[in-house]
Length: 344
Image (cartoon, rainbow, N blue to C red; front, side, top):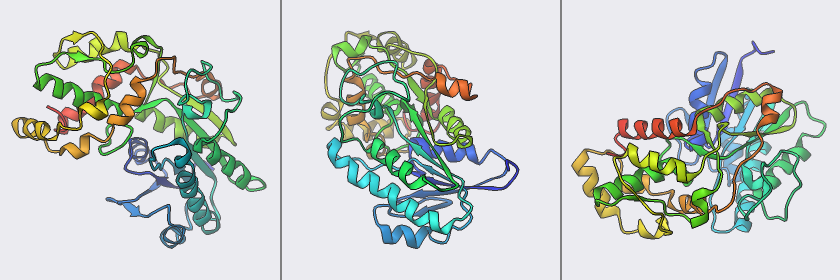
């Protein structure tokens, strides 16, 4: 079975998660990859998953798909508003692919710690896959319940992958923390300022973890061998910003000053002109619009004045033993941003 040719359909191909997943799949023998995104791209299908008719028209002929990797996401201002569009996109995709692809074997759903209520406030840590649910709305939960109902009596299986904050290099993404930190540090340096932690005071000393996008890609493909299971996937180490922040400052040759709570979404709103001058000075190749989409997400992460980590032992017991060092991950991502002329 493992030697049979596999065709992967990756929804959210331009995101931090989808981009790295495609890159990983393309290195593995026996896989053919089809990317899906709203705006399209090389080797991708441009499709509006919110539009059921467009989804059926674009995907209804993909009769050889064996694996669906769902990492698409649309942002909305409130938790309740997130549910209808994100559930509709998954539903429309499955409605189009399931009848078209008789060889469908697995659907992988990308989730996160919102399943545990991590976005609402202090929650039980370490979070485990069998923890009790919480009061809705929460689109990750609705998506999994949809797959559970849809899979009943079918030959295909599903997996739910639950990473922490994902570290990757995709631009224009609403949830790229590493890029937000890199741009914030670059602007601080240009202004001759120290690197201040901008989050809540309690967040500086809370315990957190992250998930390297490359590690996540490996885990996601590994989990296709499971049958209807959820897995927490993280780097395997814990950190506090109070320990990591000075190391990040040293990377950028910056001093560290005491934390000062501020909204990056607010203080970075007027920095486009400054960034344009930085780009001209250092020969950068991306506009401010491509590097400024994650300020709100950074504010969200830096506002966690409570512990944010899960138990990853279920995946290890099942056979996935990869890990990554979080500080090394950040420095590698910063190096990649510099190499790509995203930051000075």
